[in-house]
Length: 116
Image 1 (cartoon, helix red, strand yellow):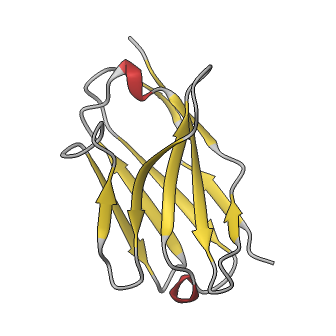
Image 2 (tube, one colour):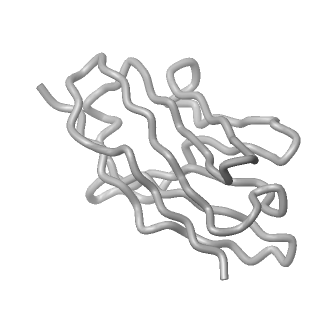
């Protein structure tokens, strides 16, 4: 069973930065891709960023140029570095991983609040 645990969320002022981590219970070299999603109150869950096993990344339009996704295969961890944060980035952030079977697995989420 694949388990994902997000961490690193919290309260940050507008313009600030946070780095989220997604720790995976299995080798992430077997998971492709690994995504970060977010869901704000009253809104649908949206894809924020995605990274493949060969390191190719994709970003949602609202975070391009501000967020960066990366992976550390040795630590089985995927990161989401968030800069120039805006109040509209406030959401619960989730990690999702796709197995070769095309089953996907979700973490429990971590809250990010951007407010002064």
